[in-house]
Structures are given as C-alpha cells and as structure tokens.
Length: 274
Image (cartoon, rainbow, N blue to C red; front, side, top):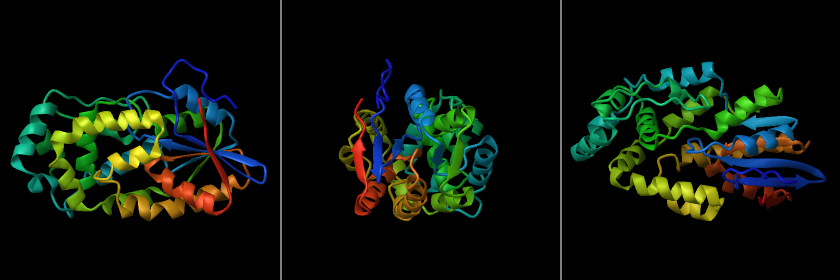
C-alpha cells in the first residue's frame, strides 16, 4: 500500500497494525505542525471504515475547552511563579505576534493574542496548561494541527468517527499536568528554539526513540497525559482494530506505550515506509 506518493513532506509516523488478517493503522500526530500532511491523511482516511481520535474536535467542543481553560481562579498562577527575566524575554519576543488561526481550526483559533504584555494577558487568571499552550503556540507560529485536519477530512468523506475519551476526560488530564513542570519549562524559555527545531526534525524522521529523548522535560510528558491515558487509548483502539479497516490518530507521545501493548497481545506492527 503506497500511502505517500506526493511531492510533500513525508508522513513517517504511521504504523500498520495487524492480527488474524485484520489490518488497521496507528498514526502518531503532532498537535502543532508547521506543515500540512493533508494528502497523506486523506489517503489514510479514505482507506478506513472507522476513524478514531483522542477526543471531540468539533468547534463547539474546542470552544468549551477554551472557556474552561480561561477560568483559572482556583488554579495557581503561572505568571506569579515565573522568573521575572523570563517574563521580560517572552514579552519581548512575542510582542509582535498576533493570533494566527490554524487551518485545522483548533481551540487555539479562539485565542486572540494581543501585541503587548503577552504574559500579563495570557498567563494570569487562566489554568496553568492554558497559559502554557497559548504561549507555546504563539511562539511556534505554526498553522496546522494534524488531528484537527484529519478530523475535518473524515467528516468531509463521511467516515464513521469515534472518540477514545470525552472532553471532560481531556480537561481532567490537562489539569493533572504538574504545575512545577509547566513553570520549569517556561523558565527554560531560552531553549525553546532549539527544542522546536529538534522536534520538527525528529518528527519528520519518524524516529520514536529520538523523540522520547528530546521531549523528556516537555510538560505533557507526565503521568496524567501519558501514563494514565495510554491504557485507556489502547483498549479503545483495540476494540476497533479487532475488526480492521480502522485508522487511529493519537499524539505521537502515546505511540510507544500503545505499540508495546499491541505487541504484548500478539499483533504485528510495521512502520510504513514512504
């Protein structure tokens, strides 16, 4: 099956998962991406009967996530915990950044980024994870989300769409990201540019081991986001993979754990080669 004949960046984070003659595909996604993989995603979705996503990705659900994230009165303040020098540097670098809507239409489309006092506006009075994702997305200035792009493709093609968790599940997981991990990553802002470049390179190579080695300090590499959810995702995915003709899209950070669980259950897993 030649999934990638197009003249665009190759999507290498795709694994063929099979057992008892039933074939499905597991796709590791980048929630933020500098490029579109629309052609590869379209081919994957076209070949599938059922398409799985972590959770709801429609505009109404994403608006609900944004509203919840903006209500941080009962949460510790990232802004108050940051090194003042880091605040000054982030404000300086992001002073000329305006909100850029992603073509995929994620909840970040709903965040308007003002042009001055960035952190005063976006890290005060919000939940810690919202402060981080707003700042990280503005820093990246990337226009695409693989998950949301695949979701829209699946809807356009009339595919059956299923979710592995609810919005409430996702919000609980986000609230479980350790506050200190978020603050520590903010305070290492001088390393964000290097991290951005390394992540892009490793993702395009499809090398999971290298990915794990460079993302250890990222806030979402934690028990609440990875450890607790991997088994839940696996069980949901396996239910549909037992029937075949399913493509599951999950964040690339979940792939190692989910792959191991499939291997333990006797599945054959092969990384697709372009």
